Length: 154
Image (cartoon, helix red, strand yellow):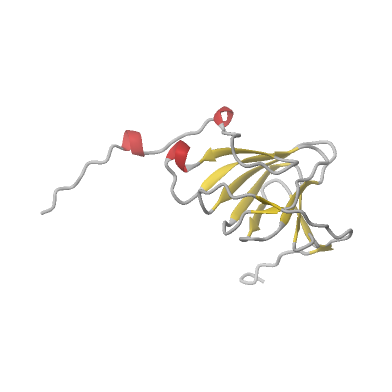
């Protein structure tokens, strides 16, 4: 019978990251403030990254993508207007409690659709690398609204 190793769960167990101890030393995009909570360096996470993003009232980010990483944005407060595509030609909005999925390499822009309150979100990514590729592109003036429909539960 093989000897089983004992795991030090105190050291290798659950980690609570207080909201006032997030790390803002992470790649930024103009118009937003990212703060990392879950990273390999901070918690030992190997496959995910998580943090927060705040966009000031009536502000928008520059166009960017996150390379091969998938991103999930969960809206806590405010109204998020997302634009995406080669020239940010598509748009849709999300409010508190809504999730936004951004596939790999998709050029996108986050916009605070409210002039009077901050947009506050939680962001999760499928990898540890803090990939932010800022893009210099000319957005279309009037994007097409695209409402997502779940193909499984139509």
